[in-house]
Length: 213
Image (cartoon, rainbow, N blue to C red; front, side, top):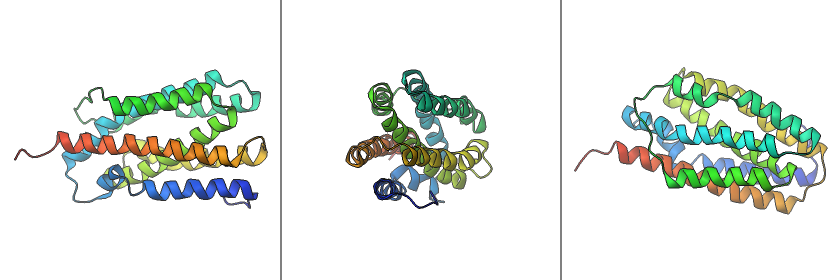
């Protein structure tokens, strides 16, 4: 966010940026950005990302369905409508010929986010959707653009995700009914889940393409 922030929001933004910088060192991001990563392993990443991409659709739908604040519901519906079908774009943009099997770690991470979108107050849902999921998506898309130049899915997200992050900060600047400590605690928990899922995707891709000893 380029405008001057009130101090509590600046603290939130600084904490989130710390998490984003740390996430750039996640094994999934490193795997995609490494030019020596075999093409087969990158293809396997795309296959194992697909269930998480599908889960993202559930997350943003639940957020819109369970939001009761009129302003925040309007934002949630706008976000949902802009993101709908992106899991299909992912699948069409790079057909790996692989099918990811059900994985308990990825499903557990997805279920955690879905549940938070059911039970948290509206502004904390904004934090999850715009400051965590979108920032994580932007980092992943930047890495994916290096791994798959010209890929339509990553090009789409490189353009859209930054605006979605800014939407979140604008809401928090406008609406003051949130506690900085609660928000930073939520950031800390949510990024742990993002890192857990991402590490697992990298682990599965490497496992699937390991050369037998």
